[in-house]
Image (cartoon, rainbow, N blue to C red):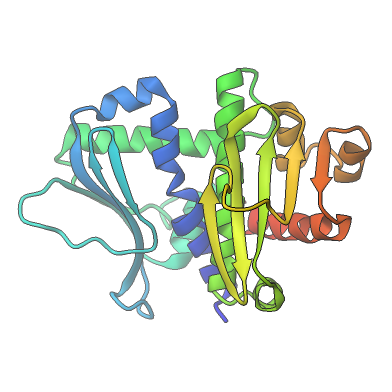
Length: 270
């Protein structure tokens, strides 16, 4: 079983950082800045217990094409442009992404000579931090849609990641589970959905609607505002159910269970 620091770190590496691809793709002004970019980007933290001496997530970016390699260290090839933010420890990276920015948490920056590539990557990271750091729902509908999508992806991947890291409660749940799919969706917003498939200890998170079978349980919201009310811990879940803002498609006890795991992911990510 991993440590609490590793749980947090894996949530950032596997759940939060991969959201950069979604954020860049969904914001035209940001997407256009990567049009002619060909670069490998990596965010890492040193750890003597890691197989390669560090944990990392990296991206291979070629214009509109983003290949995400979550929880994988990049292997530099020839003269390929390369930018990296390298934290000195797991704890330093965790603190930085939780907003505790200072001399002890700042990363080493490699590839700053690639001024444009470095600059647009920092813009994307700052946009991600701005979105996930919001305390009240945005007014713009496109931003609401993107934020709910990011939350859904983070929660589904986060629960799966904690299972794979051996989190006691979540892994025990996964071990006992037959083949089931749990989903999140918003009425009238097919692109704003995610799911996690669980079977005999194994989990796999996915974006979009699971189409191979009817999900065993779906947490369905009547609109984006209702989703943000729960996702941002503004509204009470039971009150949202009573008012028809949140529809639990499945047994209520499974809603409570998934809700608890959502809170655990949120606690590691905040």
